[in-house]
Structure formats: C-alpha cells, structure tokens
Length: 438
Length: 35
Image (cartoon, rainbow over all chains, first blue to last red; front, side, top):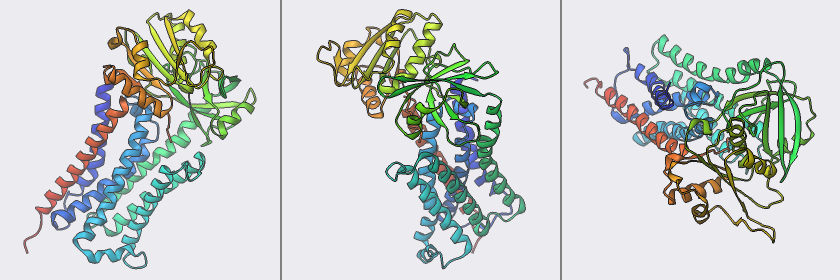
C-alpha cells in the first residue's frame, strides 16, 4: 500500500477504535439520558479509557503500524496523546464536581464508594506514570527500571479504571457490554505479550554474534555483529534496531542503535555508538562471540524512502552514524548522485569516522564540509556551528531539488531546520531523526 | 519535518476525539425522559 494511504488508514482506524466502544454504549438498553455536561463528562471518561488501552498497542513496535511514520513518530504520538488522554480523564470527575460540588467529597479515599476509590487510584497511577516519564533523568531513574515501572503503572491504571467503570458505570448494564470492555482492555495489554514473549521467541531463531568492538575517535565505538546460520537482516540505510546482548532474547535490557554499515551487506551489521550511558560505556568490555538479538529494522530516516537527484546530509557528533550508512550503501550500489555532507563536531581529533568518510569521497560523488567548534590553530575549514550563513556558502545551486537529512543533538537539529527554511528549502524536503526515544 | 506534521495530526486527532465525545453527549442528552 502507498505510504500516505497507509498513514491515513491507521489514523482513521485509531479514531474508530477510540470512539467505537463509547458509541456502542448507546445500544439499548441504556440508562436514562442526563444533561449534556454529565453525559459529556462520561464520554470523556470512556474515550480516555480507550486511549489509555490503545497506548499499549502503540509501543508494541508492530512494523506494519510504524512503517508509514517511523517509530520515533509513533513514540512521540504515544507521549503527546498520553498527556491529552490524562487531561480528558481528569476532566471526567472535574466536570461532575463543578456541576455538583458535593461530589468533591469523593476525593477522600476513605469516603465515597469503591467505584470512586478505583477511579482515584487509576488517576493517581497515571499521574505517577507521567511524572516518572517526564522527570526520569532528573529523578535519576535508570532506563530499565523506568520501563518496568512504566508498564506496571500503565497496567495498574487500566485495571483500576476498568474496575471503576464496572462498579460505577450505569452504561455497562449488560453482560456483553461488560465483556466488551474487558476483552478490549485485555487485547490491548496483550501487545506487551507480543513484544516481550512472541517477538523474542522469533529472535531466538535469528541469532547474531559480536564480531568486533572497535574504538573510534571521540569516545565512540563501532559494534559489529555477524549473523549465525541465517542470511542476516535486510534494512534500509539510516534505520536502526534494538540490540540485546547476552544469552537471552527475553531480556528487557535492549538499546536502539543506528546502522553505520551498508544496507547491501546483511550478514555483517555495524553500529556507530557514543559511549554515553552505563550500557554503552560497558560495550567496550563485551567479548567477541557474545550472543546478540535484534528487534528491527525500524525507522523512517532513509534515503531509500525519498528518491532525489541528490542529497544534503547534515550531521552533528554521533549523528554521523546514519549518514555513514547512506554513503556506504551508495558506494556499494555505485550510486553517483551528488551528496554534500556537512559534518560538525567539537574538535578534529574527536571527529569519529573521518578517515572512512575521506575514503568514501573516492567511492561516491561526495563533497564534505567539516565544521569544528574548537578548531586547531592551522585549521582552514569552517568553524563554529552550522548556521544559515555557513549553509548558504556550502549548499549547491540546485538546492531546491535535493533532499535534506539532519541528525545530531536536538538543539542543533532545531537550528539547522530553521536555517534551511530561511534558505527557502521546502519543509517537506527536510528529514530529521530525533533519537531521544525515552 | 515528519515531527512537525505529526504534532499537527495529533491536535487534529485530539479535536476529533473531543468532538466525538460531544456528539455522544448531545445524542444522550436528547434522551432525557420527560419529568
């Protein structure tokens, strides 16, 4: 299916899935109608509940669902829509309390009914889940612990909300309506079973082995994996996988890494990695031969998705990784379309992969502009940051016909995107990848 | 680029969901039994 059609289809399906259970509550027998605001408040509760359940579906990395958008977009949507669902869920009791102030007493967990207690517990679990997600880093919560807590709080919020609806909901007055909500919630949560049990069982049959861990300039590493007894993984240049290292594919300790190798080589996969966290720093000590399992490929940041007469690649720091995959793939394919690479980093000595890039200028139609924040004394090239002025100097005359790929620290990507727009590059030609998946 | 469009689409989806809830509420409020 065409990517745009597929994109529209999933959005439409999402709306149907979120709204349908609420409208099914209108099938008779129904409780007597009440005034608009009471019914509106109940409707917000229902749609908040279905959205909460569908959140589980969004994170299960179903490739069919994520392919039209890229998984980073799905996760961005997961975060954004969660905030909205939370507002709707809080609005549900808030509207009732504004209409009937006496209901404020239900906020006391020792008063009220079990229905109101479950409702409160659900909101509390959601509030805690959001606080821990937004402030994970300042709170010093490590990624693995956060993931487990996040899933448990999500399940708790959903179960409490179902208990609340069953006990309080006059709408759930028939067995089939009760069953529908339970089946719907269970079906969505079962996405976790798919992600944590079914997918790893498949990965077990597609084992990889660490072939090499290579030091690169600037505290960066290359992790090389070889397929064991199978032809490897087909991917598009610029995509990424979740990598699990060790004896079991069932571990939740997995990390997203971008391919730095050519998409034409499927049995030996390489990843460019910045040693930032505990896991990436410890990668240096991973012995050759260690088992590895991959979930992927994922991601929509690829030259294969946007055919063009040529490309402009703008990378900051380890954001060079997907660009390297583009260039190596183009070299293997003997693709001679012109490419301009603007590569910015702190210093010449810490600029990862620059020897490989220099070699690629021989094999492809590549021009490189290095930009150093802290240049050596005899440096003749560009300095400072990637600005509109620098790009105006560097971009080809036929800049309108190129596709632009930007990857680097978030601030740099914002600045570069603004600069490109300033230079009349159309927004739809600028492609970015925000790798902050947490 | 995708991120900007995705933000816009999210707002559209959110608006449609709230509108759907309002339609439900309006339909149900028409069903108030006579006093």
